[in-house]
Amino acid sequence: MSYVLKLCGWYPSENDVFSGDFVQRHAQSIATQIPVVAVFATKEANRRTGGIRMEKTIVGQLEEYRFYYPCSWWFDKVISQWYYLKVIKRFLPALLRDKGEPAVVHV
Image (tube, rainbow, N blue to C red):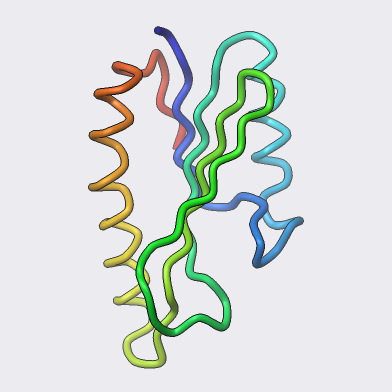
């Protein structure tokens, strides 16, 4: 199955519904022609403990995966990068097994 994989640095989320709305609109536009899988990971505001939480939305040919991980008081940037890499390392292999290789990867 041919699809576009978008690894988003900004995307609307619970933290900020307007952050990256242009990226989401771009994904929606592409999804009128070809399936799109958008992946976004961010720290969850006001949560300091717990694991990674996933939110999945499907609208037409657009699949959106939002991952939320806890923020940290200590070494916040380092911890945030570690969680982001953990999400990508766990999710992408499963996605590739399920859907195959994407036609295009947009970062």
